[in-house]
Length: 426
Image 1 (cartoon, rainbow, N blue to C red):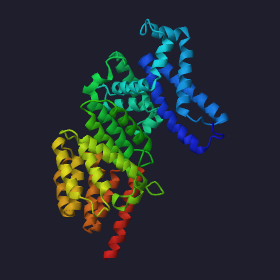
Image 2 (image 1 turned 60 degrees about the horizontal axis):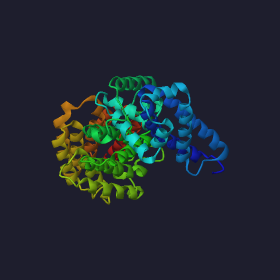
Image 3 (image 1 turned 120 degrees about the horizontal axis):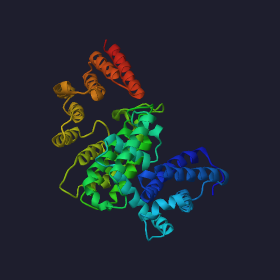
Image 4 (image 1 turned 180 degrees about the vertical axis):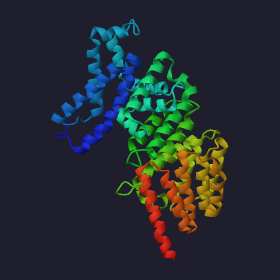
C-alpha cells in the first residue's frame, strides 16, 4: 500500500473508477438485467465509497483494479444472501449455484465478454444514435449524467430522461445479455463502429464547454475500439482502421493546445511533441487494416491522419494524396463536411483560389451546424491570398456562428492577425 493519497492519485483514481465501473456494470447487468439498474448502481457506489474510505486511510493498493473487483464481488455475494435479490435470479439460473455463477462472471475472459455484450446491447438499432451514445457512456464508461450532458451539449435532466427511455426500450424488447452470443451480433458491428467514432469525434473537438479536447471521451472511444478489436471476424480490418484513426489523432494531442487551453493550428504545432509510440501503434493498425480489399471511410480518414503525422513539416505535407483520399471519401458518402475539407486540401495543394472555387460550389447546401467550419475555411483562403480585409469579414461571420468559447477566442485572434497584417500592407 502507498502511504499517502495525493492529488495525482485522486485524478488517476477518477479514471480508474470510470473504467472499473463499466466492467462492474457489465457483470452485474448480465446477472440482474436492465430492469435492476438501481440495484446495480448501489453495489458499484458502495464499492467506490469503500475504496475511498480505505485508500484514504491506508493508501492505494498495488493493484487497485483487482481490489475493486474483489470488493464488488464480495458485496454482490452478500447482496445475494438477501432473499429479495436471490429470488430475482433463481428462475434465470435454475439449477446453478449463484455464488459459482458470480465467480465465473468475474473471470477476466468473462469480464471482457460481458463488456462486449453490453456494448452491442447499447448499440441497439431501436435506439436513436444519441441514446446509444448516452447509454454507452453511462453504463460502459462510468460517466455521470452531468458529464454526459457537458460532452453532448445537453442538460443532466435531458440525459437522465434519454437514458431512462433507452433502458425502457431495451426492456420492452426483452434484451437478454446471455443470448445470443456476441459473435452472432455481427450485423450490428457497423453501428458499434459508428458509435465509437462519434464518441471520439465529440472528444477530439468538443462542441460544448470550455475545453477544446475532452480527453476522457477520446480515451473511452479508444478503449471500446480495443475491446471490439478482440472479436475475430470479417469486421476486424475496419476496427483496426478505426483504431489507427483514433491513435493517429491522439498522437497530436500534446501540441494541439497552448498553455491557456487554446487551439494551435496544425501549421504551427510543435511536431517534436507528437507521441511517437502512438504513431507507431497507429501505423501498425493501419497496416493490419489493409489485409482486405474493402476500403471504408475509417481507412481513408486514418490514411489522411497518417499523411499528416508522417510529414516532417506542414510545408512538406502531401496534399495531393490527401485530396485523393477526400475524393474517395466522397464516393462513399457525399456530404458538405468532406467537401469543405477537400477544398482546404486543394487550397494547400493547388492554391487558395482553386480551393475557394470549390467552396463556392457548395455554399447553398451548408447547414447551420457547419457554417462556422465553412466560413472559417473561406476566411483562411482569403488570408492565404493576403486579402486580409475579406478574410477578416469571413472570420467574423464564422465567429457569429460559433457556440464554443474556445472557437470564439481562436477566431478573434485570427481577426486580430488580419488587422495587424493589413496595417503591414498599408
